[in-house]
Length: 168
Image (cartoon, rainbow, N blue to C red; front, side, top):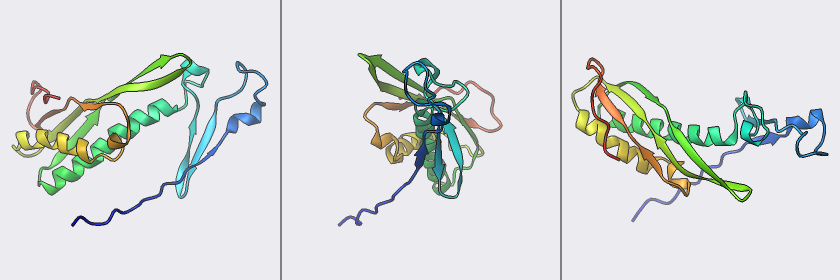
């Protein structure tokens, strides 16, 4: 018998801060800027992507979705490595999301994570394999309706480059 499901609730308060510069009298003229607040955390300023008349200096929902997938994979992977006694000494990712715009709407077609991990142990094969498990455990990746792939590079912290990426 499996354990009962636990429910977690996340809250965000969104305020359209662009209203301070005027209403939506014209599609081309209104501000797309907004603020998102979370209890006990600093607020986030955002806008539409520049391609959709937004402020390119601010975060946009598409950036945040890709960042959420990347950071969820990171946190799942680090937890798995810690439990497996694999010491991760560095981790970075250049995640890329692809969105297709059609008939006035759009949808993501895929996100590819490119984690580069350095570990202190010799357990390279196990550390590489944990990326697949991290993907299965990532709450965000299991919530989207498009493929999230990872092309991980794992090497020893004292090793040089040249370790081939894990097969997707």
